Image (cartoon, rainbow, N blue to C red; front, side):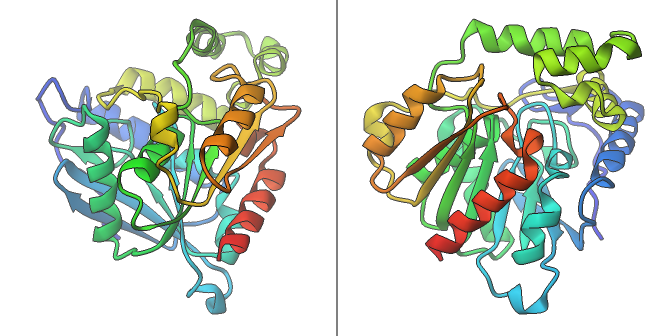
Length: 305
């Protein structure tokens, strides 16, 4: 089992840990969250032009499902693959699953070259999939990872059997309301324990009532300096180039984008695209309604296969 332990880079234009001590603290916090999901069957380090990408491999539970088209998971900004803990058990029960730590975000990947442009992001993911020997995958991304998946479908779609976007970036310019929600949510992690359930409900932030998630997020903010491409919105012309089967899942109370607007826009521009809005959730449908989201994702992938 290979795990990246490379000394943090000193270049200001690549993501880095502030010290070895903080890196180890963050790894320990992540491992507590990983323990909430399916156990990884293996870990891999894949070399790319931008550094080493750390990958977790899960399932499938049934060896007969080993030949099914695998799922590749791309996490959101400021996090790592541990955030997929509610999804790895169901997904890996039916398919091989690979969860990638994105270079430039905290995690066990080690960034060595800058990733500033959307073209760079697409090249990185292409090289990572090639390094894993994956010629055809169901790509799933949430939030910033949704932008990475959408960007891949636009720029380097050859390895993609399908793309699933969970309340993704890349469809609209990120507004002030989203940044305000992020700031208030982070501030709320410091609230007294008795207040956290009420704040978690108001902000729709499960991180506030799960000590493992709370510790991971707070440690990431202190341990790591993020460096990665900005999620530039794709234009109507960009979206109309996409031919990969696409499934868009939106939270009804999303603050990142306008769900009804995008549920109409995306299928209109991308032939055959499917869009659904889940009630009772905001920016995290795969966490707030994990079993339902997992069921829908697996059904979509089966329909593509």
